[in-house]
Image: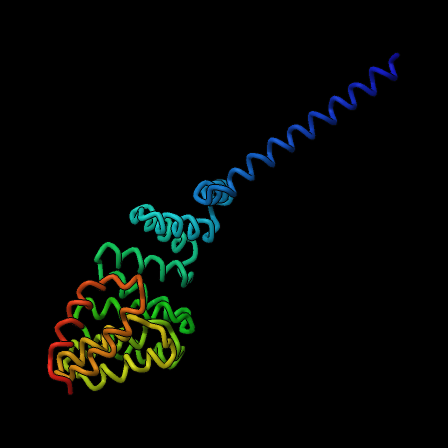
Length: 237
């Protein structure tokens, strides 16, 4: 009888352990299904590690919670001031907040720490262009394109800077380079159409506007259709 009771107690304890493990597994799976809660849980368990703060900051950033993202990236950098990716992402937050000087500072420091990461160059160029510091933007885009010649949209951005500086030949060359690497890029066709239109080279403008419209998701499609309609009434060159 005592042996039977002993065995019952052992089996009871065994099932309690299995139940506890099942509950823990269920709770942990719930955390994995909610990325924000997962990284909060990681921070609670390891508050002195920079990566969980960085990852939570990125989740906040993607959710549009700029202040929360900034706080987590700053905490990540307090724990590891040389964490280049946190510097880069903090720059993204500042850019979203229209704090361009702060964004530029973050991107430049991120480049110093990791000069092989092309996104830092690209976004530094965006920030310079936003401040109309076009010469500095050109230099940064040129550095980026040496590092990664096929970086998406970089030739377009360089071309837009040349367009702002009233250098249409260089702008055209940049947009054509974008198409060399990304032949289906509708934005490059759109920008080429605009440059040729300003230069009154209507036939070339028409060709590129029509190619831009091959992209069914082109945000300015209606404006381009009107431009095409107008160009088709113009004498060709």
